Length: 331
Image (tube, rainbow, N blue to C red; front, side):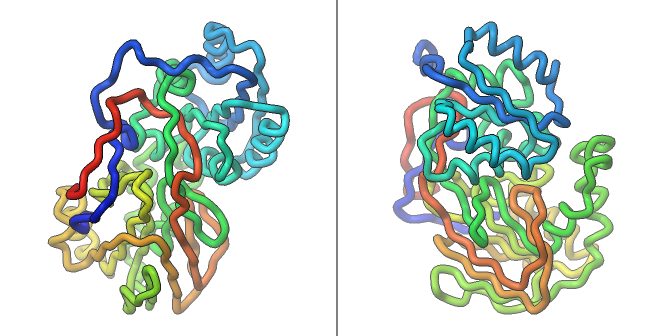
């Protein structure tokens, strides 16, 4: 989804992993304690045993180690790590665990290194961090520490996207067993069951003015460009530009959804009569009936209103080392 020129916004090549790698300019290994906060049910390459071995190879001796069985248990461990003096948090898991860690660390100067061990790993993909344990750890230890924005919805931060309607209901119905068996195909399989659900009345206010008032099947708030399934939903989104991208889908049946998604995948969402996009600092969403919403793939309780805003420079994340910042006024 593209919505044209965003005036006066500085864009950073490193923010989405783009750019040409530099050589001989690595950040030194972190001095002080390194904390691992790991979802023990998530796996990548040789698993947590290999992570321990790799940390030993990098001579990380002052190590804090926390394992959780559910992402919602991560915030307590992150707080313990910070109180114990951790200078770097390594988040092992999917987008759900990473979101919980970033929500806890918002406003602090403790950097986060992402080890993408989940199913979708959307934030990692948007930042150019591949699903390779040794490579991801190398980035966490030697990459650039980037100050990135977060979105905040109903008091909780997100890094990738927030959604209400079709998107959130899809996430709610994709269970862990299905994700383990089908991987990313689980989202598409479940999505087919949801396209028949009718749109419902929604009123959206952006930066104090009414922008949308009608029936919608899905509302998305994006901090990065690529969302579920790697779909390029927001062509111009950058996680360091001080904006949230807003998208509304009004498709109401299988044919309309197919047409709309086809335009999105082809990079022609502006041509679709079923898609509207904009960008904003603050967004208020009023729903005629309560619906489930989601943050970075994790569903939350049903509600009939959402209050969202961008939080600039909220967290520091280790990303691949790239060329210096690039600024553009016509991205």
